[in-house]
Image (cartoon, rainbow, N blue to C red; front, side):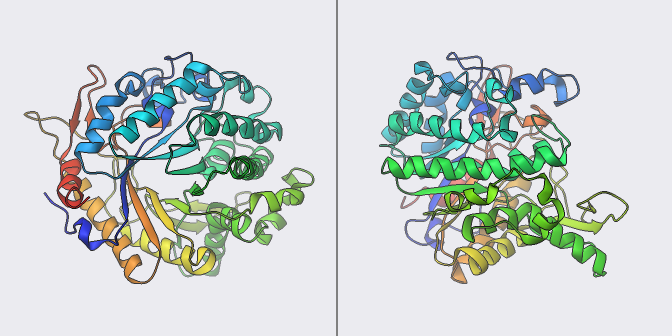
Length: 444
């Protein structure tokens, strides 16, 4: 099983990487890490499949050298990792030197192997002490995130290749405060709209700290939605516009135009924090690059009998991943081209996550995942088509390096390029990892 492309098909300097997130792999019980709202949410029955948590996860805290050796063996240029706020500041405010020492060792180990460290400051580990004061519903949280940013960047900023402030603010705010799908698991429009603004404010606050420290190559990572109407009737088209406002325009308009979408503010602006308009200049500071995570499309139908946003999702007809997500690489191409044409223009774009869950098993010491090989191949072909049409693509990160803790789905769903036996912590690179190695390790 091999890819249909090689490194030579991409522009010189195009970055191939693998991505992870701290809580999903490190093991939160190690290194004096504090409690996060993921620890407490997972401890509540019914929230997580198997009542699993990230206390041990892949034990990357102790096994990072082995994992980095795997990345190097695959010929990857870069490793996208995140810092845990609860590890750096267990109470959300006070520095844990053991936590900063760990990230110091990690970044040194990355650079020693000739790999470029790509840092994400926040990938969802909100300290429980911050959750106690309302978390992302409280304006103090983005201000304290600025302090966390300062602590991290003063320790490791001299060695990281690029920095992303936030990973997937839609998940942090909407999925977690309106749909209830992740910690803190709320279903409340007022909470959601406050979180939707405060997570953008956290980005702006962190950007200011980073710029003040002379840090460059700064961006944010968004999981924007590519929505398509279930039919061509006017109600479904209108519902798809609302889907687009929630998933895409909320973030892109605030970052690149300095305001939120008027149609969304008209609908739910009464739930926004007072004076939010005064934060828009901070939120819309210039970026050096933009990261986009893509997994599937949304097919939208109107649901006028329901409260706003008056919409439901429809299952698509194409093959699905283990998550039940439709495999639709054309959506990545359309999304990237749209963002380039409407918002970012000459700004470099990165695919910072793309991948699929599969029910992978080890047989005779091998883990064959031909569906994932085709998934990566098809999505990277979509990236190549974007490049051919002038979209300034700078890189692609496969999600994920390792099978890991898949949030509310526990350890059941496997996204990794590398299989992890959670009982023994034995790592086994899959066929998809070998496909990357063959395609990109030459002329690195």
